Structure formats: C-alpha cells, structure tokens
Image 1 (cartoon, rainbow, N blue to C red):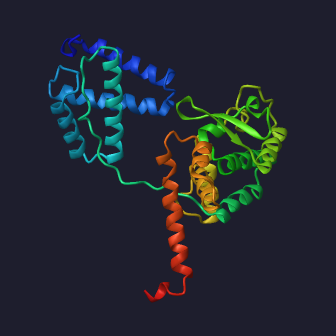
Image 2 (cartoon, rainbow, N blue to C red; image 1 turned 180 degrees about the vertical axis):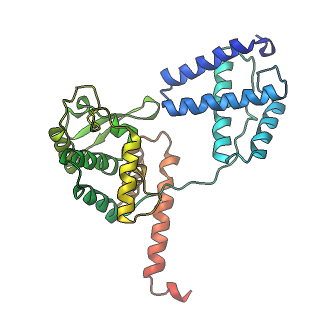
Length: 306
C-alpha cells in the first residue's frame, strides 16, 4: 500500500487502532494515550499546513516539524515525547504493512538533561505522617491518608498504584501484588507498620468496601482521585514549610533513596519500584553520591581549607 494514497479518514482509523493497541496490548495509562493522541494531531497539523499528502514520515517532513516546534519554543521534554509518539506509530504502521519498508533510524529525539528525582529526608517524611495525625479531619480520613502516605513511602508505590488497591490485593498482609506501568506485575513486601495502617484505614472507613473496588474513598464514598491526594500533600508541605518539590511522588523517590543510602541493592530496588530498566533506578545513585559529597564537605576537617 502506498501511503500517499491513504485517505485522511482511513488514516485517522489507523491512528485510533494504534491508540487502542497502546491501551489493550501495551497497557499505557490513559493520560499517556491522550498525550500521544495530541502529539500525532500536532504532526498531522504540520503536514496539513505544508499541503503534504504523504502521511509516511520522511526526513524532510520530520525536520520541518522539528523546526516548527523549536521556533514555537516548545519544551525539549514535549518535543521528545512527540517524537516518541511518532516513532511508536510509525513502527505500528510498518508492522501492519500500512507503511512499507519504513526506516526510522534517523528519527532522533533531542537530548534531554539528566533529571534527578527529588527526595525528602527521613525526618521530613516522618513529619508529614505526624501532621496527618494531628489534623482536625474526621478520624477515618486521617487513617486513610496515613495509609496512602505509608504505601508510597514504605512500599515505593506510585500514586495511581496506591489508589487502585482493592480488598482483593490484601489477601496476604505481608505482600502486595501490584500491576504497574505497562501492565507489569510485581510483588512488593509490606512493612508491619504499613500493614497496620492499611487495616486501620479499612476498619475505620464508614463505607462498605467491595472486593474489587478501591479501598480509598472520598467523603461521598467515591474512589479517591489523585488530585485530592496532591492537594492533601500540598497543604502538609505548606504547614511543615517543606521544599516546593514535595509531592506524593517525592515519597516514592524518598523510599528508593533511603533504601540505597542504607545499603540496599540496586537490583532489588529496581524490582521494588517496578522499573523496566536499571538505568532508571541508577538515577538514585547520583542523589546518594551528591549527599555523600555534601556530608564529606561539611564534616571533613580539611574540607574548608580547600
């Protein structure tokens, strides 16, 4: 099939088919799929502006697209994601014979600076938990929020993973089976203090919990959304005067960083976090190295002489 002859409406069906494949086969999160959908629309918009009727990516059209994004001062992270979306879609089309003999080895993303995860100290993490206990909220709400924070800091769960936990996940008090990004399953050990906080949250919840429905509910008995947890952590951060980068995800970073600082094995931490690549987990070694350097500079008797 010659991509030049593909009708725009038919091509739109291919895009929808690809998005469905990302959801059902690759198990991408809904927000990622929506972002990729917008990224492809941006690429198609560029082709339309230049009256390009061949949907098959070429070096020329790709460079024009990149040039447009740079001229509009698009963030490098956004450009990288858009290129990733086009690359994924192109591979999908090549696999399904929509584009024949497509070589995308030239399709490169801009180089991004290494972004180190932000983590808070052990004392700051403890402070967040203590502040929840002292709030004037209803007891069951405090118990719920303590359990949420413990799961992210004590088990290294993502926020979405935490809020998706159901009674069905809790058959073994010592382990949690988590379905993470890409539908990948991992088993996470549960500390006694985390298990206790979970049981307390469940027992004090005023609503009837269903076996396969989330255990963390709002005041109206509906599944708690991520924005509610983000607002909760933001209020605690302001009260405690913690750094502005303190977010729910910071607790997951703190989990990894504190394990590594205490001598945890990098491969084990990779498994606990559910990272596909060890290089993702290795970013935490940079944080640990920075901390060691800072301690060295502050405590070594000869440091100030330099």
